[in-house]
Length: 479
Image (cartoon, rainbow, N blue to C red; front, side, top):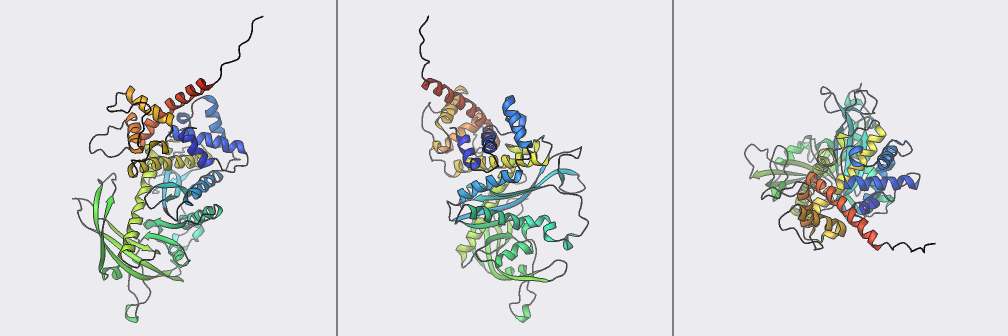
């Protein structure tokens, strides 16, 4: 069994879609998508039978997209159960999809004046403390309707998109409970999640979260004279407790750098009031940790500045450092979004024409994107582990054969053992990675292009070995 098939079986093989044949088709599709990621169904599946089967599965109403998503979430819960603590990074995004006829079931995305169309998305990405992606723990997809007639302040929570911040947390906890997983979840969320219903979860025993603050909230009275102390004021008077170095990843408007960050901590009680009626919702005891870059800021770069509200117990400088380092893992979901939406999976290039088909396609593509990032991350953080922990022997032989055919310098001999870091770099070189000094590690686009070639040759090697093992037909005597 090739590595993508084995992964697809673990990811989707235990699903319940009403009929085993639907699960089998889903496993086959997921394995093909991982071996040959592409934005369109036509580019991914080759041959009339595979293409017809994929379209029928995607368009079939008896295979609901949320059942497909639940299958992926349950597989992630099983992997998370192997860890005592799992980080759940929750973040929102959107998938662009043009629908001139207005029949594809999509809605508006982005600013209203732009007029873009597509689906809204929110993801809970499970990750270890070392930053290794474990899978999609929860996922929501929806199409926006027309502009809301009521003001945001007077609408019920269920009518606001912000309800997904806590709804996804409930989905995560349900999947973990179904898997009998004892892992503890630590939710990490950006400024859009700085909302009363998210912070109120800090009153629930055992709930761990860190939210980047967006509002300068009022705090509960420490003394009568300080009844209106604000969050910012409390942190300005707090002394520095630690300094930490953080890697700030490269983005389209900044190079990668290492930032020296100063930490300040304040234990606070946050006043939560309803936005419209100002009715008291609760006073939540939290810890505020501010992280500000104080040195090594490149010219024209914006200094790092985070104000974090957390329910993680902070008893000293080590705990404050842990909160900041945990929140820094949130950067990892940006790489998953890039892999999913553009670089390798290119889900925004889809030409499907119904919400159900789009949602199922996007869900499978998201699972593939996380799988690609899992492989790349392990190759960077554990480069010396044996490559056969990820790839089959046929795939490694195929990579070595293609490397010699392409005259890649210092390519290993056929059958030679390889480390994971070297194998990923070699496969990426087949996809266009130049490995020049200072270029950085391989990215998802070059790796997936190279792996498509490797998977095709590995399939040929496996077929040849199978034919060699097949016994010759029995001889028949002539009449």
